[in-house]
Amino acid sequence: MSAGVVENFSRFGMIARMPVEIVRRHGGKKFPARKLKTAALKILQLIEQDQAELSIALIGDAEMRKLNARFRHKDYPTDVLSFPAEGDLPGAERLLGDVIISVDKAQQQAKERRRSLAEEMITLLIHGILHLLGYDHERSAKDAVIMARLEKKIYRALCDEGRLQV
Image 1 (cartoon, helix red, strand yellow):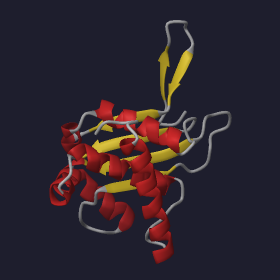
Image 2 (image 1 turned 180 degrees about the vertical axis):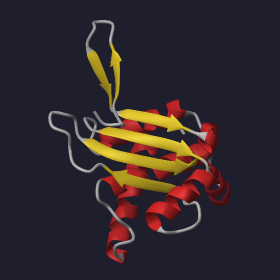
Image 3 (image 1 turned 90 degrees about the horizontal axis):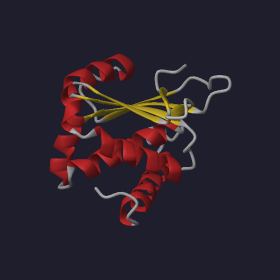
Image 4 (image 1 turned 90 degrees about the vertical axis):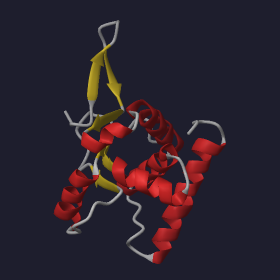
């Protein structure tokens, strides 16, 4: 079973899968997990991946810097990292992978961009999920435009149409 799968027993004794698991450590405890989980579930519905499983980690800049150095060879904290799952498990729901967000970096960017922390976190979550689906703005200018348009479309559908209050 994947690390991104959380199983709970329902009142009927059946196992219910939860498609989104959130872990908060250190600086990641500065943002309510429930709000992000709600957003993640709605994003997965919008992109027709609501049967997929997703793991989200909310961390601080110190931990993000270490991850960014290890996996991208860049010695500074970044806002979001995505790690796609390496193949599907037999008989399991689709496992998208892991999105890791630095809440410290999100707070800084929210202030710079004059938006709420919730708006920034949702923007980063959308960005991370799109990376899990194979979109990559660093591949080419054309891919960057495609990804940016899709991010805006998802954000508008999520927030502007009242599906989520941020």
